[in-house]
Length: 378
Image (cartoon, rainbow, N blue to C red; front, side):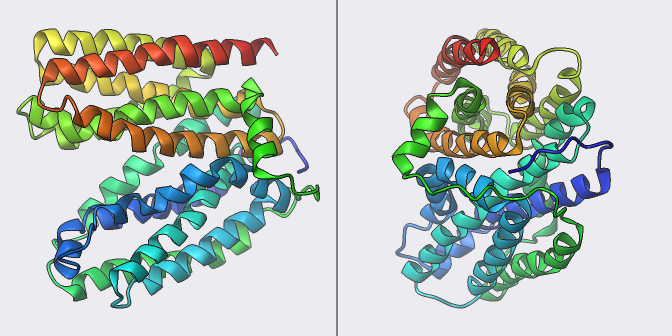
């Protein structure tokens, strides 16, 4: 994949790609927000798996997605992801048996994976060096903003007609954005026609190279915290309002990290962010104050933004950035999968939740910090 330095930051394209990211977040949010109605449609089925079905492909193929994007090019990867995702979203508007619906959800993960690897890689490629960290901090907000917007837009859904409107509406929005992407995506970033290595070799290339693996390890450690604590902290602290405020605080920290990365190296932001988060989680346990939990999420948001900003800092070539983003997708999904059941074991105790959060943050300081330091020396 050819690298070319951007003479100016293409903000209109970056805004279009970020807006596309909101539809990518909706691949999860559209089911999360209609889960009760989906359970009524499939009363005897394990519909909670419909939420994580999209992530299955990410866990299994995140590293390979980085190679696919690097080989076939950013433009083609985004367009294929958009077309595939639109077709699968529209198909979910059909009244299907649960096994068929789940098949579509898992297949939807392929488009999701291509998106989350190709979009940030392309955004970084179209930004000036001085703006890359800000652009990556901006990209890091897509998931939370997408969830929040859909929560505002989607009314309470009780019948199949309402579910169908949500699913088909998501597909139509992807159809609408496709021609905009077709017209706007640059053709100058071309694919590298290399031979196709086997999956074992791809994983070896990524996870033996600290520059490719560091951001993914940091991101996977962060995702083990985020969704699980949003789910369990409000009840443990008897503060339902935290369900809304914690993601917002996290978003603010992620966005702020992009600007902070202009002055402080992104790997240092990640390590210090994990350390400060551990201290604030300890203060949360001692004080029992929900406001301290908000500060903790602000700190973890800085960690998230630092990981995104570190990808172009450690990897100059778009091909390497695609591989690093593939590792972020894979390890991020693994963190999400493992974090929730781990925190469920201590969900009834604020001290238990805080203790596990502190342990994960210390893992980030020690292990992710070591890999980041090694990457910076190489």
